[in-house]
Amino acid sequence: MKASRDSAITLFVFLVLLIACTAVGYWLIFRLGRASPIMLVVGVATILTCLIRKRELAALGWGWGSWKYQWLSYLLPLVITLVAYLIIWIAGFGGWYNSEFVLQQMQDYNLSGWSETGVIVFHLFLTATYSFVLLLPSVLGEELGWRGFLVPELAKFMSFTGVALSSGLIWAIWHWPLMFGGLYGNDGTPLYYQLFFFTLFIMSDAVIMAYLRFKTNNLWTAVVFHMSLNVFTQKVFAPLTLENDSSAWYVNEFGAIPALVAFVLAVYFWKKGKTEFGNLSAWRNTTT
Image (cartoon, rainbow, N blue to C red):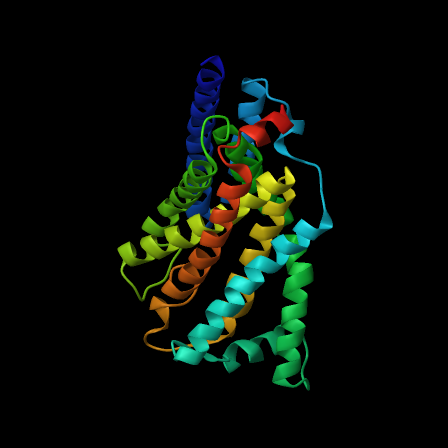
């Protein structure tokens, strides 16, 4: 009972600080017109919570663990986005490829004289390596909160299913004000449609990330997964897709296809999580 009460107080403190820090972050966003500051406020709320509640920062899961799971965390978002966009291209919801975007990259990279195929390969390589690493500070800021702190804290009194879904829903709702404010989303579909499929996409990813967090007992799998997801979704497959009048309903984080593909994979990892971790009592015993 004491442990549950302690966790409830800690979670309350975290959520209050998260709301306060996020309010400041959103103020900066609307002042600056870009979303970069917001990702760091989750980490700030986490560190303040740990200081107030006298929780060790070392307990957030800093160990690197097996490279096998880090590579898995990197490749799973690639699989999700690749399968989703193959479906999109084959079904005609969008086309391969957007020549205007490729020509812009040719100019930006100063690759005049290269073939468009060469530019695409170069862009893929650069975003999958250099751009991937550049995301580290902001994504680490988020994941300190979601998978470093929130998932283990929820695991003190929830099952694997409860932890995965609750952490995913909080993660999704945290993004909603940007969508309500028109800074995140698209202009081609109703807001309720975007909210539904974005939330499904985020919660599905959260199930996979929760499994990896418990499997490895470190937050780096979540950081790698999150960075990979942002890179392949936002910087590779979405801009390379030649959109048509119906594309907005199916592409990106706010369309149906990536969300449904992620959901199918999430069901697989949810079943694995239920089988391997049960009610998480065994996992809790290894971390206390």
